[in-house]
Length: 283
Image (tube, rainbow, N blue to C red):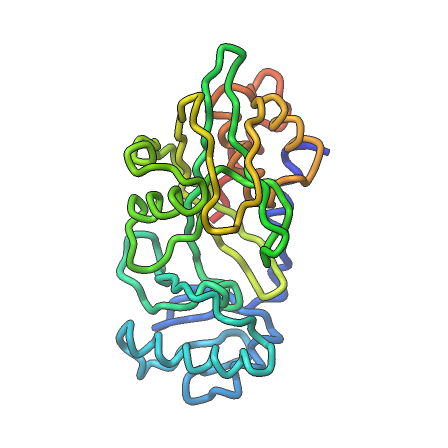
């Protein structure tokens, strides 16, 4: 097994199984061919053709589009085509920083193959023996990757919040990090992947932060999503990523990026170095 296996896993999908989802003539997502048949029932909202699905042009505003698609997702939950609402809307955009095209519950974003965003925080301690990372264990009742290892803080980017506001919210909920400490987190870039899943396609982008915390700080989860935290030497984290799938699928990518930036993976000793650098940014 290699580090590159995690990048391959996060980008595994069959393009032949998907067709474009268009808005105003532009492809903003991708839907499975089977899902197209379910959307065809709602012919007043979607135009379903052999090679694409389009939202009808009469829905012009963010609110009109949101309400129209909401009508569909509520109906498709009744026959279990779609999972129940998560209760958190994502702002759907063509590109980051643009005004939202519409809002959609995060549970249904991948069914339409739409771009989603989130943030991950590498919480680390600088000891005399070297860097250590705070690693969480996900609750067994999580719908995604139950019981897997995770970053100290991570979360999707909901509509209506800036990244800075979301970082403070997630830091408080996931690790009980006080705002004055959370604000010292340094943005260090972003990574992306294109992954097929049970519902559809995930063209996800994660904004990355490094947060150095004092040796006497101990994270404590407050929202029930993490069952425990452990402070691990970077070398141990490195080995577990290299030899196992113990971590949630996309967390492996976050850690690989951390290892490259902090000089633990080197071009002279890691044969896949360039493939890793390129592979961390697929969307």
